[in-house]
Length: 342
Image 1: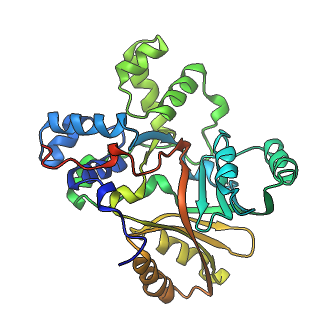
Image 2: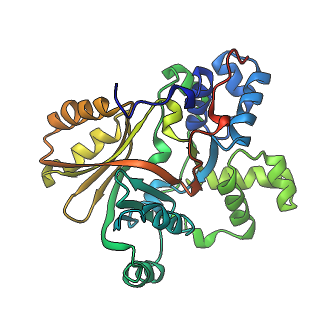
Image 3: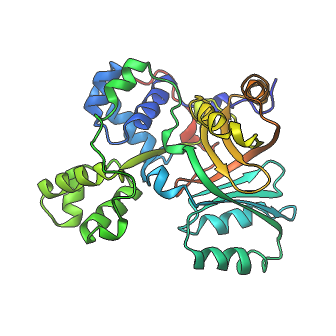
């Protein structure tokens, strides 16, 4: 038996997994629309979604546009003394400019993504981390190109027709770079901040919180969506979906093959992030697998034919923060599926 196999007491049942996948496709879809597509009652969908959200198992948050936020982001690999990984990870997770934090297998490496200006970046890399006695080494990779990110990953529990029925119709977007965050006014920023906490808030809830008419909120959200600013991300521990192994693959790819390999991995259903990077590895892919055997098959059957020159595999022991949301560890009673739930 694979020691990384998902604990059957800490996985979601089939309908819950389908609900998670529906939210991955359209994080703001209403319960009625989801119920119609999945063929269950709206009452059941509402009850299930409330439970998943209130227990903290699932959160839907706004995620910045991948081209806007990822390029120029820093991927950090922080080596720490034995027994210090959790403390360093928690300290990084408290920073609003660090949306992703993982403790790697063995506990002596912490992985993180940093989105910050030069000042905050330099204070962390040149001052705070070197002055931390628990940190022994820091490797920094800059993201040069994003092929796919966590907001685009789908867990694969819906049929293609179901996913298509849930997807929002495409919105005409302006040319990349033509919309500046500096041009947003106070109401725009307030709406984006609230959706960053809970992207499933209704127009009425947002209007009440902002003290503005609901029609104004609808117009503003439509404009923000057109600017590519309303992407959503479902934060859920992959082990609850039966995916016990989360790994970062640091790949050495011939420059002439980099674009093709990155695009191919970005389309793979197990991959939840692919980035061209600076540093000794020029491509990083984050992959979910059901067990260690599945990771082996991914390396041999998927990476092998792509002509990857070298692959370093770093397995995540625990995801601490994803898309700005701290994750609760699995194992609590709320994780246990209830038999014969309607």
